[in-house]
Structure formats: C-alpha cells, structure tokens
Amino acid sequence: MKTFVDLRSDTVTRPSPAMRAAMAEAEVGDDVYGEDETVNALQVEAAALMGFEAALFVPSGTMGNLIAVQLHAQRGTEAIVEANGHIYNYELASIAALAGVLPRVVRGARGFPDPVEVELLCRKKTYYHAPVTLLLLENTHNHASGAVLPMERKEALIVAARAHGVPVHLDGARVHNAAAALGLPPAEVVAGFDSVLFCLSKGLGAPIGSLLCGTGAFIEKARVARKRLGGGMRQVGVLAAAGRVALRDNRARLADDHARARRLAGALVGIPGFRIDPAGVETNIVIAEVDPPEAVAGWLSYLRDGGILAGTLGRGRIRFVTHLDVDDAGIARAIGVVRSRPGYNPTGSSPREEVP
Image 1: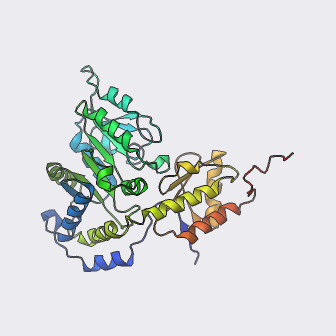
Image 2 (image 1 turned 120 degrees about the horizontal axis):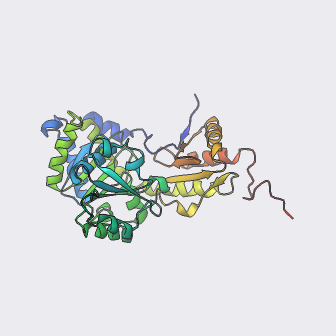
Image 3 (image 1 turned 60 degrees about the vertical axis):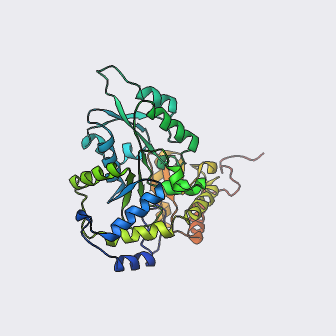
C-alpha cells in the first residue's frame, strides 16, 4: 500500500496514543446540562492559558467565529475583515447568511489591516451608512504563509477600534503557532482582544474541536448561541480529553513544525516555475506561487505520484503545511520528489538561461 507524506493541512493529523488512551478513560456527562467534567476541565484550562475568564468548547472554528460575530455585532451592520481572511473566504458567508452582518473588506499587508484605515472606517457615519460594529483579525494568517500578527500592529489595531467603541475578535485558529514563533505566552499574544477562537484540530493535533474564549458573561451567551446553531453536545468528554492532551503535549513542539517549514521553503528556491520567499515563512505554512498558474494541477498530480500530498490556495498557488505527523524524513522525501521533476536545476538558475 502506497504511503503518502500529507502536507495538505495540519488538520490531517491522527490522534496520538496518549490522546486515544485519554479518550478511552475520559470521565463524561451530559455537556448540555454542564455535567461533562472533562469538557469543564478543558474549558477552565483553555481560559487560564489564554488569559480570559471563561471558554467554551465548540465543534469547529467556523462555529466559534460565527458565534462571536453574532454576539459582538448587530444585524444590519458591518464587520471589518481583511480581504484574504479565513472568515471572509472559507466560512460560507456565514456571518452574512446567519448573523446578518455585512463584511467590510479591506486589504492589508501580509493579511493585517492598516490601523489608520480601520480607524477611519470605525468612525460614526451618517445614518444611511451601515456602522461598523466589529473588527475581525486573523493570527496566524493562512493566506499569507502563516504570517504572525506583529505585537505593535495588534496594539495599534485594537486602539483604533476601541477609540470608537468597536470590539475586536481574533480568529486565532493557529494562534499557538504565533505564540511559538514570537516566543511569548499565548495570553500575552491575545491580550486586549474581546474574544478569541483557537483550534485544537490544527497544529495541536486533536481530532476535533475549538475553544472560544471571552468574559464570563460573553461565554454564557455563547453557550446559548452554540445550542441554537445545533452545537449542543452530550457526552463529548471523549473528544475534550484529546484536546486536553493537545494543550499539554503539543504546544511546545510547534517550533519543530516551523523549522521544517523553513527547510522546505528554502529547498523550493530555484525550482523552475516556483516563486517563493523563504524569509516570509514564519510558522508552518509554505505557499509557492506557480508560473504559469495553470501548471498547479500538473504539479499536484506529479507530487501525488511521488507520494506527496499538497493543496492549493487560490489560483496559481500551492500550499504545504507541516505538522506533527510529518517528520524530518518526510520533509526530505518531499524535497526529493520536487527536485526530481524534469527541468530542476540545482544551481537555482533557469534551465532556459544561457551561461556566457
């Protein structure tokens, strides 16, 4: 049976033996009644880790982000979101369809808006313009090769929104990768946000689930909103147990994923038809621009034939994501397959160039 090095996403990881053991032994109860002690423990641990009063276990990051928008913003108003943000591009327009909130799209540098533009948009407008009632940020930024939101930019954006009473929610699906890259505690990285969503099922390696963090009053309302969306769960401690192991065991090792991503990015330099800036790889996502863009399908097919799975991220872009199920040997194998394609020149120059 053919084995693959799966670099499509960090969502493809399998539960570790420690997670499976914890799941088998988990103490459970009816979480709709608040009686699942494993879920309760996970929520307390997550809130403390992130520096918030409370947290809520939700099935997915999309649901957690939607709940935050429903609670922070008013129907018929606008939420500022970066043009390449996950909430705008990959969550099925849920904030418009279900929360009744219009995305006010702005373009940012490496996925992060300009605080000056945010401040201008948040200013009170004439009555026939929809007001901005929420700012949505993403850290790390998926579309920008896992870019980390700089701390000074974060502070400036929060100040710009708060000057007009606009709350700020963080889609921190991979915020623990950001914390690892910055060398800071997660609570410091997310300090100042009104609410934060982070995923257990990406770099942290749990099979399912995310945590929405906020004040106690906010999380009480979030529990109601989760139930309304069909997210009320029963004996879900069997899943929360894996999340507790993920928080305990897998945050410290995220730096390994980052190092492997940088190694892969460096090896892609000089591949004909690939454009990549290794300096822009801060965490575990490597994005290569392919020229011509139509060549992406051929590349993905070639990689698959060689036992390497990669994904796409928009026209003309191939995405590789490192994670705990890909070790150094897997990265070496991926590099070998890419370099074995006809036309590769190990000097890094185009094979069409004539050397005088």
